[in-house]
Image 1 (tube, helix red, strand yellow):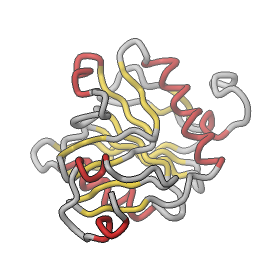
Image 2 (cartoon, one colour):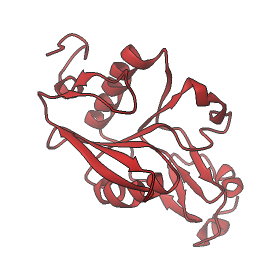
Image 3 (cartoon, one colour):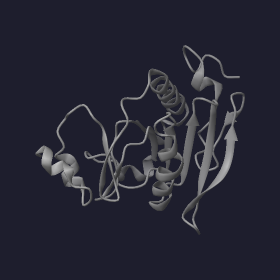
Length: 196
């Protein structure tokens, strides 16, 4: 794809997305618009993501596929996102394809960075709700919290379920295998070394 072809403001599709050059940047498509993601996440962001993935794998890997960014979630031909982490129950593993995840995961997690906070809290949460992601977590590294939102099937919008502080144990009404303490996301070393 030529550089001048990338200038179009709307009408982007998954096919266009696959033709983007490997230029070191990460992109998403929202409502047919190409969005350049912020520079690579910080090392702290990546460590929190890896720890969360490790904690979820240790308790949920028998029931769920757990994937970390970069992974394309293809909600529609003109709506492709790259969440930080996601989970898909094995009963729905058919939505995990060679292209990415083609449909709503059971859980999506976004880890806030200064450049992504507004997008993660408002824009992405609306999109994830619209396409039927049942549970959405926001990990706030600054306040060291995990916010949990559940999809209201009647309104197709998220309702706030709970906020967990550093000493709190995170559980989920939808995903029974989830069980970890928030402080495990931010401690140094093995996240399983300190359970309480």
